[in-house]
Length: 294
Image 1: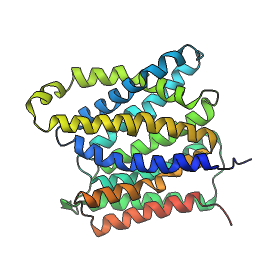
Image 2: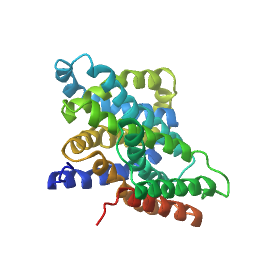
Image 3: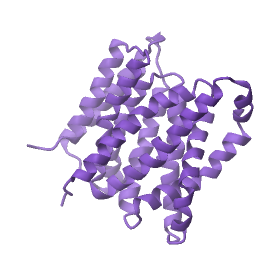
């Protein structure tokens, strides 16, 4: 029986739309001084530091079988996407990236069908085709600085949304007995040391802080991204998954592109006609795939 979506879930929905919709402009600000590798690693380090006080007591209560599942949540839901989104935005507008993020509910459907034997309707299949058609248009459209050039960087966002879709199903079906705060804090603390190793051992992050006048501001934007867009947002998101449904939780991506595009327009970004068509097709595809009868 399908869960009824209550008022609390809708509050989480609105907060997440605002927080995650703003994350793409924060990534853009971080990339002014840092590389994609540095932005991704710093984002995870900031989030894991904030959540460490919550994770330590939670570790005492988990069972052995939870550990690999929590690690997979940390990798799929935070670690890999943090790097993939930063890398994509070196060649994509923040607004386009925000709309591509809307593919997440489509991957929720596909992974639920293939991995968890969840039924998929003809209407949902049509939505999947329309959504991926829009993605193809965005790839073929290039970007505003190089119109007509095939932009393969969009595929990094597609891969990140695939990881999000897989992660959402893992939380729902493999970690139903753990509270949202425990899932978020422990999974991020597990991947925090790896991110710190990358940031301080394999990048020029530290020298840039003393040499680049923009570095401090960019660092603050990325730290804000890690604390709000990763740590706090994932607590809200994982809680929403538990009190609603995976599909409702992933459908926050309907609203995220609106916030992302508004930020992009304020920041002077321009969109090509083919990009706008592709973005519209993605949102239409997600709507068709998730629309209920009646």
